[in-house]
Every structure is written in C-alpha cells, then in structure tokens.
Image (cartoon, rainbow, N blue to C red; front, side, top):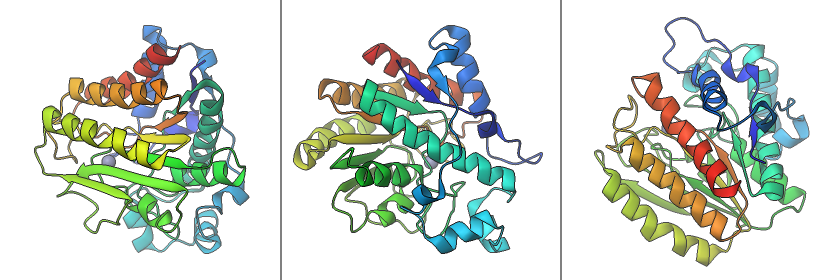
Length: 300
Ligand SMILES: [Zn+2]
C-alpha cells in the first residue's frame, strides 16, 4: 500500500500576502483523492517527532532556539516563515512524517511525504523555508536503528541541497547527490558527494540526459540500500524561483526514471516534495501529483 504522510497542520495558514504556496499541502491530497489515485486509508497522520530524533541531525543549541522562540529576527528572516509555536508543531510532524515514510518504504518499497524535502536546513540553522532537515533526520534514524547501512539522497529540486550536503559532509554512510541550477539560491553552495550544476534555461532534454548519464553509475558505485528522493517541482519553466525550462512532461519523466530505477533494483525509496512555486497553483499540484500517480502505478 502507498503510505502517504499528511496532516492538517501541514497547511498552516501564513499571513496574507506571504509568497509561499502553503495551499499545495491541502490541494495535493484533495486532488489525489478526488481522481481516485488514493483513498483515505493511504494517508497517515504523523505525530510530532521526538526530540532525541531531532538531535541526531541538529544541535541542541539550535533546537533550543526553535523550541523556545529564541531565534533572532535575522535568523527568522533567513528561514522565511514567521515564527510561531504552531509552525514548530507543523515542522515536527513533517519530520516524523519522513521518518515514518522511511519505515513504510522498507516495508512496501515506496512511501511519500506530502511535505518535507527541507534540504536548506543545516545542523545549526534554518533557511529558505526550511527549519529542520527531514531527510537528514530520517537518514540518521535509519542508520541509528540499523535499518539501513548506506543511504543515497537524490536531490533533484532546482535549488542545491546545501543543508543536507553540510550535515553529511563527513558521514560516509550517506551519499548526497544534488542536481540543480548553477545560478540560483543558495548563493554559496556546499559540496555534496556529487553536485551537478546545470545552467539557467536547462530544458527537458538536457536535464533528463544528464540524469540518465549520472544516476545509474553513482548507485552502482555507492551501492546504497536505501534512497531518499527530493522531487521538487521548481524545475518547471513556469516556476517563479527556478530558472530551468522543464515541462510537466519532463518533470514526470524525471520521477518515472528515478522511481522505476529504484523499483527494478529493489531499492526502498522515501520521497518528499521539496519546492514548487509556479505562478499557477494548478501547475504545482499537477507536477507533484504525478509523483504519487507514478508511485502508485509502479509499485501497487
Ligand atoms: Zn527548491
């Protein structure tokens, strides 16, 4: 069964005029339920993550700031969300959602978090709409519980996975792969185990060819037994923050390739959504929903 992490708190309302499309977290499951791709039983609501599991990837000092509202105005600005205790609750549910997706992936092959993919969060700080790093937390959890030995994080969001790269810089059990736009946020990129930076305007053809040329060889070399996949849809040409020229079909082909590869090689895969900031919410929802449709189609 395709288990999907979702909670009403994912759709936490932001102040009027905020540019982050929070409504996508409501509309993705609504669309999938409406069209019959999933049923209510596919959704599970994560609890708030336990603090000990936060501290595998984040420092106690940073968690103290988050929990007790001690972030400075500058730190809050860098994160990009207004600070409220509700937002911390939301984030804790998202983190637990990705841990549980990892466990479901071990059982069913694949599992998806409607939110998450918060790859800009560092051990000691947050930025770019990311407070805590869900794949970092989930990967540390799997390693700690000895449920995986070698984990590959495949990050195909248009932005570089700087926080993830930094957290795992000296951890050989986790391979970080980021394919992103060279001239985009974050300004200072952290070295991943493999970074592939593509120029602005990159279209489906170049994007997909690069992926096809890269992914099989790094998986064969590293031999992971678990995959985390960040399927950001800000690679679309319609995206306000991305600078790529990919189409909906291209984004779908990207997901299909990664998912099929993991399915054929019996690699459990946990997926989180990451970015998506197209002008029309319809494009964001359609691109994200394709990831779920493919997972359902390939595995179940
Ligand atoms: Zn992004």
